[in-house]
Length: 458
Ligand SMILES: Cc1cc2nc3c(=O)[nH]c(=O)nc-3n(C[C@H](O)[C@H](O)[C@H](O)COP(=O)(O)OP(=O)(O)OC[C@H]3O[C@@H](n4cnc5c(N)ncnc54)[C@H](O)[C@@H]3O)c2cc1C
Image (cartoon, rainbow, N blue to C red):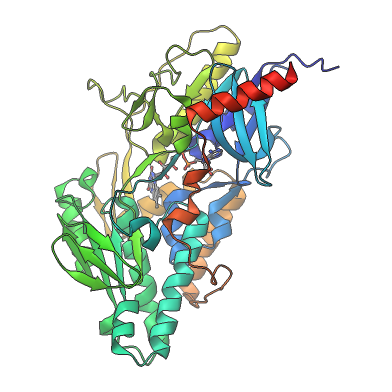
């Protein structure tokens, strides 16, 4: 007979928000006070802001994959899989495990932190031909892909093939796209020296955005400074421009230009995980509408945070302002939501999440960076020091800090060998393949599935 009567807390997603929550729960709750379970497809927390550096080979993939099992003190039960639906009425989360088994996990409290996926638009050919920069597999794949373009261009005597292999397009002038273009341009710039048959002048990086400014959150001066750095490095920045259509060997811009390319990287924003729409609850621009305590109004024991939730930005003091989808907020919301879960368990009052934005750091590779910590505008080495110092501090485990610092040092001293691993090479994999966006149920499917299971149990 099952005699366990402890409350069951289920955390969905092991990102900045989910892991922040779980670690705090482990610290604050006595072992017999509640059972904590985490659903996550991977056994690591991905440090996303450093992904462009994985793509460019400055960091190894392992160094940004922070282990969920580093310490014996981590006592949370981990279900390896992804949540594909949540039935709020029956308090059941439907999970597809990594072996494709469907299980129903009951909970008393659920913390939804599945993050976001790449936001795409109805642009012909986009999902079939673009890469994203949201997963470790994508970053590793893009690195191999870019190096293989150099290898293939070097081997080819066809000028048209060479031209299309040596042009690269990044869409999205936010920090993710700008860092990706800047870091990868550094990679090709350094790598081409090892390809004597390639004319370096043929290599062209394009960074485009429909907005009139790069990274508007940096302010005019730093935004311009970033643009100057990119221009100096030969990156062609086009603002007020997007993609009309994408094909396997060329991309058409909305200003009419047709760029021969086999590399289209799409980083034009994010949208909440499709898990959120399985709840059938209210959303704000796709993110789950929660209150400042990060609870779902009208539902008992449902919390949501991070990129997946529209958490009111109380520090801004503006009506309707919501926290931007950043790691800075997600990690702090994680610890805060854990405090609110514990308060709920102990019948104590919940507190609202309030955090004043600390600013932005943008690593453009090598000595190039622009940063605005606490409103102070920095360029060059001080900005790079702030960028790397912040990320280093924010890495969760000491071993991850050592790995990243060692990688940075090794790269600065010995450079890169531009090795193409070939692990993922045979099958082309693009946006639609990496983010498993078609794995989710509809709200009706969740309800029918859970009711069917309950019927069987009865
Ligand atoms: C290239 C890049 C650079 C960035 N740079 C910065 C920066 O410099 N500063 C900054 O503040 N922010 C930055 N961000 C944004 C930041 O990474 C996100 O805002 C942050 O990761 C959000 O945290 P989260 O916990 O909500 O989601 P995530 O960290 O994305 O974690 C979500 C987790 O949930 C898991 N998951 C997804 N679906 C399911 C499911 N159905 N079931 C179970 N688990 C699921 C995922 O595998 C993942 O582990 C950057 C993002 C990118 C892509």
